[in-house]
Length: 201
Ligand SMILES: Cc1cc2nc3c(=O)[nH]c(=O)nc-3n(C[C@H](O)[C@H](O)[C@H](O)COP(=O)(O)O)c2cc1C
Image 1: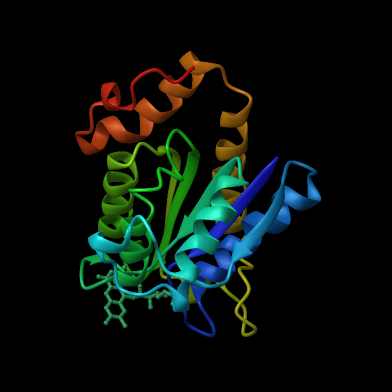
Image 2: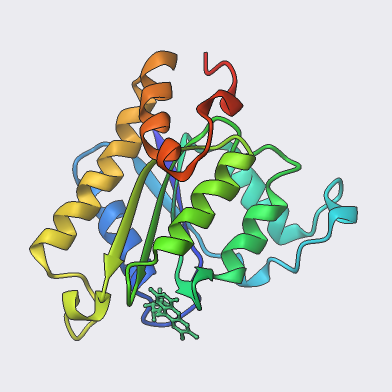
């Protein structure tokens, strides 16, 4: 099982990167999945619909990475009540390639107020391209839960990140009905009709 992690922050001391690291270490240590972080987001240019059939190299790398993965863990900041543009831009490039179609995805946002709007927008835009968001997590006031080196040390937060990552990996073993239940539990509260995902077999 292979899982890609994608962080929508380029910050040197990013709380979202730190949260994804906790998840990756957990999946690795538990023998649940091999993880690899996609590092090339800063090279992904602004989305252009007229280039989707021949996308830039960084986009091709992202698509190839995802196409070799069973799942995706995305962490991104919320800025001014919305999803960080870098993350939305990267996700827009994936619509045409269908790289995320029916892929189990976990979404988190670490930010002052817990990133609820960033999470909602990730759930929506991922669902619109057929990805199956099966776990969401908001981390409020992340700096209060990290040590001076920028690692999460708050036990409750670390456990919540572990549980979030475990939910995504658990979806790999589900049959179609199980996956539908899992994704429905997440997307229905956002007013998204799970029927849009079609046949999950
Ligand atoms: C311009 C700006 C706007 C922000 N707006 C929000 C917001 O609307 N909601 C929120 O939860 N956090 C907000 N934050 C806080 C960031 O989400 C927080 O700094 C987060 O840690 C950034 O992610 P990173 O540490 O992964 O880079 C904002 C930060 C900045 C710089």
